[in-house]
Figure 1: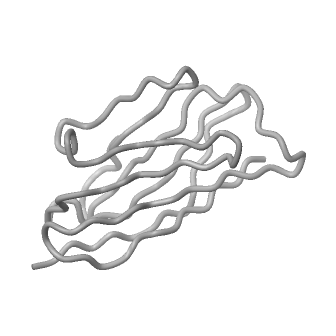
Figure 2: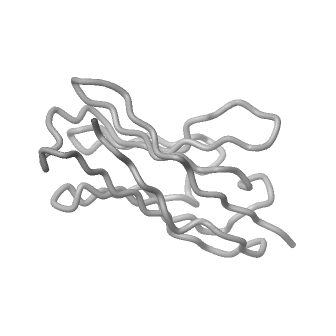
Length: 118
C-alpha cells in the first residue's frame, strides 16, 4: 500500500508563490511500476480536477488554468513530487491532492490546503 503525504500548503496573497511537496512511501521501500504522479485540487463546492501530471517517461500535462504559472517536477530517487505555484490567483484556492498511479492501483494523499487572498 502506497502512502502519500503532501506538505507546503498555506495562506498566501494574490500573486504570491507556494511550493507543494508530496512524498510517497511503501512498506517494501520501493514503489514499482509507476505510470504517473500528479496533482489534483478540489475547491469548495466543486469537483476534484487535474492540475498537473507527469508520466513515467517524464511528459507533463497541465490544466489550462495553470499553464505558465505552475510547474510540476519529480525526484524519483526520493519518491517525491513537487508543484511550484507562481502568480497565484483567488481561484487557485483549494485542497491540493497528490496522486500516484501504478500497476497495482491509484493512490491519494489526504491533501494540503492552499488559500489565496487579497
